Length: 423
Length: 94
Image (cartoon, rainbow over all chains, first blue to last red; front, side, top):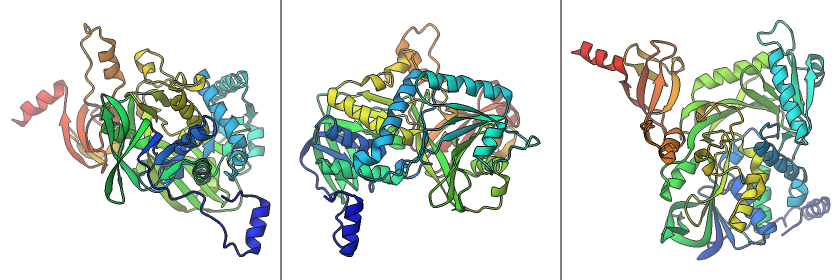
């Protein structure tokens, strides 16, 4: 496989770009594997990559229903951050930040990680106090954070309305300077190429229709591929299917989980010249916006708060999100939206993820990402690979078990209680 | 989405507050099994299809109702009154 470099670009250009090879093979399924990962999205591919690269488990298949990266990895608003308060989340997401920093070099694939900063706006003095507390918490955990006053926010974000007469005037903000964005598709492609290179079979257009069970233990998956049924055996099966967790786990006989699926909408505007230097969030509602390298404003807000498996939402969220955007940046009022879309979120009962052994023997579950799964992609794969290879969680994901709900140890960053539609 | 409140008639869903899965039933307080209470508080069926769920008409009569809605299409097929008011509504209908 070609190693990408300035030299390879130059030599291929001189040869008319005829010699590029596909980034990953079109693999045919074998009869059995050591590990099967269900779900060829960011988390599944990252898991396969780290299984092969860190744990030396290369007899691995990633089974994907559609084409590679066709789910939430290609639908998110690409934000990468670790501004959490609770230690379990803080340690886990900071591990992810560490992996993000070296990811392009490690994968030899440009994931366009851009640590441009994530700025959370504060609109009341009380909110500034909360941000000061959160910033201190982050610093105690070794994560950079800066509390900005109104003038510093205005200098950082010249297009922002910081006028005192605004409905929700900006009084300051909390900046995580090392947070930012990455190119979401490139993350999936980079991990796929990296895993493929180490021998992992990536089976696209292969839908899991059931699980093979022997004596209560999962020993493989039933699949439908090109209209044909085929069983693929495996010693271990990892499930990382995000919004489809409920559906896929029912196939394994797990009817109830501390997860509800909802729809999250995202939006992109027409391209304009660079105007927002950071990822910026509105503090008086819920809106996050950044500008893509093409110039489009990529933004989103709250989930449509009822259960949903429909990859489309309703108009009230459009109204809420766009009005918040215009409240922050009045000059965006005349921009047109290019696209909007909805993705299905696996909202957990405490707003924190689940990376665990079980809940069935022979199976491992990676789910409950709510709508923050993208930033977690590297650490999620890293921890899930460890959990699968070692049959027990790493310290970083030891708290993210299913048992935590029974044991009274939920990781509820927001303090919203068991109401997944509020997380 | 539009929800037909049994008391107020058809209204935009923004007038309502979502209150979650209607299937969750609190175990008796004498039930000391942790599993039963954990299942009530946390475990959900999360179906793709018909889902019975609680909504409160917060922007209207403030009464609860059970809505049967398809989570794949958002189509609402049934809006049922619940609670003590439901009996009065049924009695008034007769």
